[in-house]
Every structure is written in C-alpha cells, then in structure tokens.
Length: 134
Ligand SMILES: [Fe+2]
Ligand SMILES: [Fe+2]
Image (cartoon, rainbow, N blue to C red; front, side, top):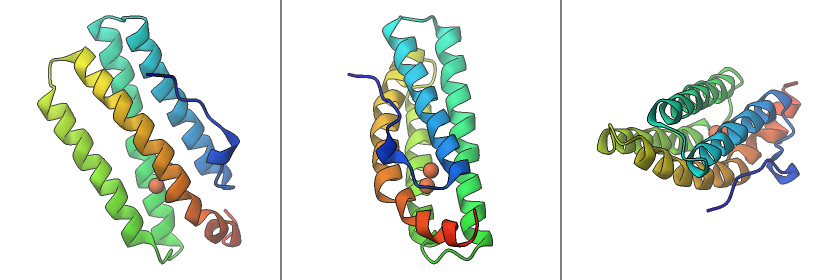
C-alpha cells in the first residue's frame, strides 16, 4: 500500500474541479496516514466522514455543472458516479462499526477509483467546460 499524491496528469484544466480533486487526493492521503499511524476509532471515523462529505459534494457539483451547460456525456458520467456511490454505500453497510476495516477498504477503493475516474472520465469534460468559460 502506498500513499496517493496529486500529479499534473490529473489536471483537467478546469480550476474549480482541479481544486476539488486536489483536496480529495489530500483527504485520501489523510486516510492512508491515519491507517499507517494506527489512529484510534474516533479519529479514523472523523477522517472517513470528512472525506465522504467532500467527495459527495464534488460529485454533485460536477453533475450540476454538466446539467447546466448541457454536457452530452452527462448520462455516462453519472453512471460512473452512481456506481461509486453504490459501492461506498455497500462498503459502509457491510463494515459498520469496524473503523479500521472500513478506512482500509475505503482507502484502497478511493485511491483506485479516483485516479482512474479523473484520468478516464473527468478529463473528457476539460475542453467542453473550457469552451463554456469555466
Ligand atoms: Fe466525475
Ligand atoms: Fe471529479
């Protein structure tokens, strides 16, 4: 297991979403550090919660912007977000009460999912939103 770090290749060219992605990458890294440093249940729960709240609002912000500007790949993009939400919900249900197990699984999943989602899916809206002046 290694830590996730922001890299230039993650940049979509849309500042507000890049800032969100940076913040999310940092929160995922906090999760990694919390696990590595064997933080207690209260701290791990707090880190997980902070991360989830931020991620939720980011996905909603992307969807709102895509909707508002008539992005033609909104449906495909939303399928990806919904798949993510569903998986997170299952994980939280399955591992309720087990802070360390949950933080560990979340870390693995978030790290994979976000890297891939930003590079393969979010990246596609860059030119579109740029043209819309975002
Ligand atoms: Fe997205
Ligand atoms: Fe995103």
